[in-house]
Length: 339
View 1: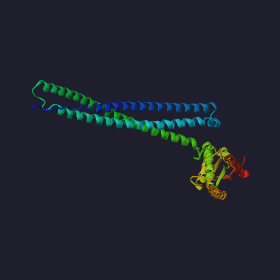
View 2: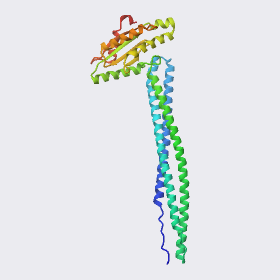
View 3: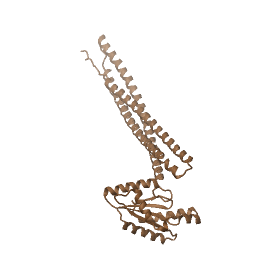
View 4: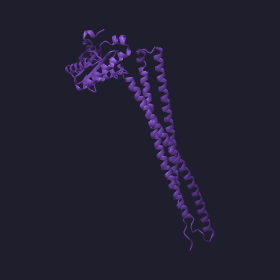
């Protein structure tokens, strides 16, 4: 009795799915490359902006006015660096997705190869028989089996290549993430340096006055009190002239240390001049502020390295701007503190 004909379906749909996935991966790789280029362009723009700001300061002699005029340029440069760091992080995530997709494609190819081997096993056994028709079908089956073997081998080669590429993508993603973290840390240090007075650790004038505006807005929203203290460190010029600027710097540092020790951790302290500081106390009254600064003056007076400060106070009213509030506190300074 002749054996029944064995028809084995060819898995073309599966092959097409893999081809489509490879095209998607190729497009994804192109997107990653374009993201890398965008990040590089942003870094170059940031470097150019930094150089422009530096050149501008140099031409103006490095004076405070020139530094202030180029501050906006530096701020834009910092933003570009932040975008660049974010772009590197996004590129790293994209590379991870490509790596995972390549692993899935490799597994699919291995599975397809295994299916072809099984189909081949179905083709080959027991096809010998009599008659030209059976012999022809056997030849067709053998040819189909050979084709399956070739496709299976090609699939395994591609799977191995996909895994190698996935490993390279993960290594690159790891490098990108590390670089992004380095750049973010550098950016944070740059921002902190720009916003902090290097000598005393208080807020710098420009950034501190912006923070002061925010404190006023917050106090008005909460309908709560706000008091400022305008502080003048007495005798800085005399100390500089008699003992040098190192001694003058130490005088300022002692004054700020005492102020910080008696104010709350969230109270704002801004250096607004060489020997002048602004202290902003939200939720406090004039009485609270006077008591705190009375304790500060006692602490400074009893310090072995004596230091004296003069203080003027002002409380926020509904009509006050930041400048008007500062002006009132300055006017409250004892007459001996004015120059």
